[in-house]
Image 1 (cartoon, rainbow, N blue to C red):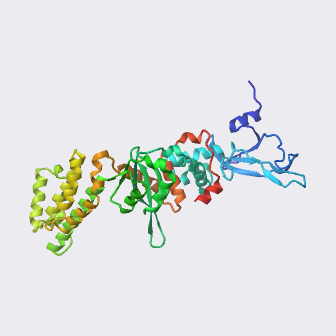
Image 2 (image 1 turned 90 degrees about the vertical axis):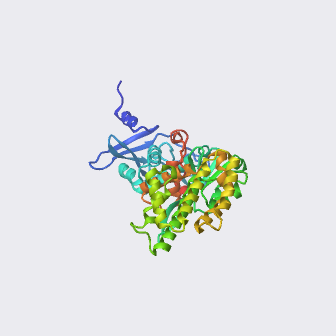
Image 3 (image 1 turned 45 degrees about the vertical axis):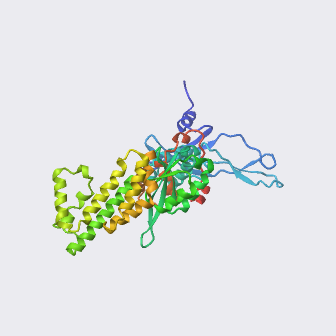
Length: 440
């Protein structure tokens, strides 16, 4: 079967209803394919009369590489005008979404390929820009335009029953490298990042939850968090019926930090200086944080000997025992017994015989006793939120630091938010790039 060479070229270009006008093949430069659309002459949308061609602007679009070479699609558009003096329409430019989305410097097929490379596979914007032979902004604008509808898809968020909040560092700004934070909102049952909002106060998460609607909020039964007052306020305000769960890791981390504070204070009180490698309490610092059941006989004997030598009042030893008792909260199988145990523990740790750091720990446990004991009901933790933050940090390392929250949010949610990538191929309409820049 013989084909016309021009038709063969049109088939290789892979675009419907276009005429290939020319192909420029210059050494060490991208292959440039000039095309125009095969469309009937339209009528004036204002008066319905005949129209004339005003001019033929050439739009230079970055395209996918072809046969191992960079490629550019030169689209010779039709700019139409109405010759009727009484018609207010004036002139307009023809559109063809299959070739390129409005106000983007990239073909539609390249635009659907780029966000998957940057978002799903974690490649850098600059890497894709070098591969396609265009600038950084062209790629980034395309990621935002095609990626925003993916992350805003309501089906991506779904209807979770357990929600988690945690903060992560967004960027350091200004001369003094002031820290700017963001809050991750995670479906802890599915382990899916739902969204990120600026700041780590209660205001932005409350606003995000308010936008979800009452029916969506009523579906949330569990709310996990670290020992954060602002996030507790978010759940108290927006999800009053959800059962809050304090993350076990953060409670044990707090107990370890109080133990370390006690050790350093006693070290200074007894030796008059910070820990040195020959000081007993300094030598015991790692053994103190290790779980008691993980210490063998030699380790336990060594720890007790170091405490006897460097802890004359027994304060560090008492703080160590307090930490181990806090750990034992999560060994209790019964939820009612656990709630009673946590309450009594908070009271006992505030006894006058306890070191000041242990009394501080007891007060914190009493303030959070309901959230601590609630873990025994559902066994949800904030670990999926921490995992989402690790994915966010991976994106930040790839991007070498963000300065604009819109770019940060889109890239993070494309990588960690599990969008439906099939939407890039079926019925997905990119966001207008001018509207995207206003949203940023």
